[in-house]
Structure formats: structure tokens, C-alpha cells
Amino acid sequence: MATRRPAHSESSPQLGGLRPWSMLAVTVIAQASGTVFQSAPAFLIPLLHTERGVSLAQAGLLASAPTLGLVLTLVAWGALTDRIGERWVIAGGMALTAIAAVGAVTSSGYLALGAWLLIGGAASGSSNVASGRVIVGWFPPHRRGLTMGIRQMCQPLGVAAAAIGIPSLAAAAGVGAAMMLPLVLTAVSAVLAAVIVVDPPRPERKAGTAAAANPYRGAATLVRIHLASALLVVPQYTVSIFGLIWLTSANEMSLTAGGIVVAVAQFIGALGRVGIGALSDRVGSRLRPLRLVAWCAAGVMLALAASTAAPAWVAATVLVIATGITVADNGLAYTAVAEIAGPFWSGRALGLQNTGQFLAASIVGPGVGALITLIGYPAALAVTALAPAAAVPLVPRERPPLPVDTEPAESA
Image (cartoon, rainbow, N blue to C red; front, side, top):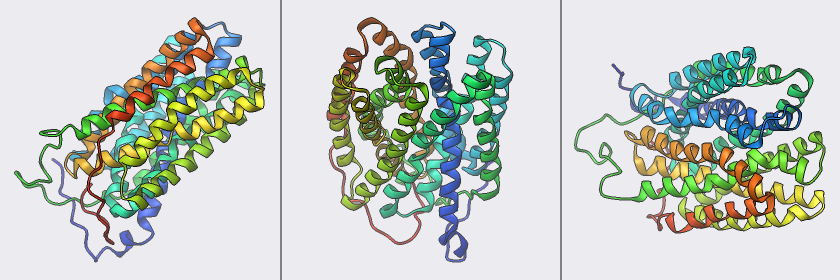
């Protein structure tokens, strides 16, 4: 039985000061740690493909195992968050991810490794849903774009950490040693979440009120955002999964240099998410910037395809730009979904949002890997530009301007 959380009041000055920002920091750490686990196998591809003879499509399938695990559990994590709150969902999910990382470290074959990656990906989905609710619950609407952008830094920062750490650890001591990095990070995140996170307040549920109504009934707004976001995942994961192997094989960069380029690209992408989030606060819209990002993603994937024939430094520069653009949409769509869904549906709505994204992402690994094998990097990268172009008309038209208030919102 879930306990009802008290409404926010002025008797909680600690939560009105620095405490929300400390919780924001914890959610970034937790989500970034989960991302390190999820993206680790993508940075094992050069080792598996070049040195151990694993086909690119098979290696891409292994890289997609954590994402497939996410798809299986995100809605369930969202429903659990709606039911019991955010704190223990994040802490428990990170603890389970750490246990899966132990299994990956000790696994002796690719089948066992894939199974542990699947389990860990399923567990790591807890922070994907619950961390966003912490931010939407504790920050007012006119700061949510900025703070959600900061929270969304976790994905590129996690990928950057994996890009730096995973290949070097794998080259030095094997796959098991490489998985020690996400093991340590997720274990630490579980402890921090349990100690620091406080469940945000929600109004009391009353049947028949607008806040408790199903936001999917009578309007396709949320569904259109889900579909557009799923399409926008295609260029993002194409770049994150195959960016390193593209630099090293098609552009003949060293593994170390390629890893540095990918890490820098992810860091710039993280800053871009904060910037686009702040812009959405300034213009009072999440959807207009989202449509702009979709157009830019289509263009930059075509530029990436063309840069395959250019010198390595040109290709690396375009990859950095492509990474920054293709990751920029997540925070916008995520915040829009949470705000539209309301306090009693945002967990499930965010679960559905991420399920669609990660379902698409789980197809990108083997699908684009097979496409690259069939038609080569330039043509395959150009084909991926079709996905963000198709997302543009799906982004809903403008909603009324965001409200501006000065107190932490009691609804999502």
C-alpha cells in the first residue's frame, strides 16, 4: 500500500533551497551511471569485431541487449514510480543494475554476457523514469527546461565516460574488466539516491478530477510526441553505436584518438541539451525547438555521410556536430510528456516515451549494422536521415505558453 506524500508547504524550507539542486545532481549521476552500463557494449565493438572476429551485425545485437532490457520494463518502472514514489525506485534499480554488472564481469561467454546486459538494462530503466519525475516535481515550469536539460546531460556524459574507459579497459584486461566501470558507478549511485532523493509532493488523488484523467483519451498529442521521439532516436543511436568504429575503420583513426573524439562529442552534446532546454524556457515552448532539432538532425546525418570521403579531421568535426544535434531532442520531448501527462500519469507516460525510444534504439544496432555491411557507411548514414525528416510532421502544433510561477510545482 502506497503512502500519500504530504503536500508542499513553506514549512519545508530545506527543499525550497539547495536540496532540489542536490537531488538534480544525484539524478544526473544515477542516470549517467545507467547509461555507462547501457552503452558499454557499443564500445566493445572494435575489440569484438576487429580482434575476435564477431560480425558487425552480431556485435550490434550485443550492443543493443541493454536497450532491449529497457524496453521490457520501462512502463512497469513508471507504474511503480506512480505507486510508491521516486526515491526507492531509483535506488533499488541502480542496486539491481550493479548486481547485473557483477554477472557481466564474471560471465565466461557471449551468451551469458548478453543475458546479463539484458538484465542490467532492464534494471537501469528505473532511473530513466523516476529521475525525470523528481525534477518535474521539485522545479517550477519556467525552470524545467533548464533543469531537465541538465538532467538529460546524463546520457551523453555517460556515453563519454564509457568511450574513454571501456575500450582501454577492454584492451588491457578483457571484457570482464571493462564492465567494472559501470559496476562501481551504479553501486555508488544506489547509495546516493537512497540518502539524498526525496519524493516530490503530489496533490491528493481524487477520482474524476482533471489531474487524475487519462491524458491519452480524446487527444493524440502524447502519442505523436512518442512516435516523433522514436524516429529521432535513429540518428542518435546510429552515431553513438557506430561513431567509433566509423572513425577507426572508414576514416583510419586510431582507437585512442577515436575514443577521445567520441568523448568530446558527447560532452558537447551534453552542453547542447542544457542550451536547448534553456531556450525552451525562454520561448515558452518545448515543441517548437523539438521541430527545429528534427530538421537539423536530418541535415547533419547527410553531412556525416558526405564526410566519409573527407580527411579524418573533417569527419571527426562533423561527428562532433552530429552528436550535439542528434541528442538535443530528448530533454524537450521528455519535459513535454511529463507536463502534459500530469502528476498521476507522468510515470507511465514517461515509461511509454522511453519504451518507444529504446525499442527503436534496440533495432538500430543490428539494423544499421547490417545496412552498413550491405551498402557501406555513406549510403547507410544517408538513409538514417529519413527518420528525423519523418519526425517533423509528427511533432504536435503549439500548445498555450508555459505558466510562470515561483514555487515548486505540485504536479508533473
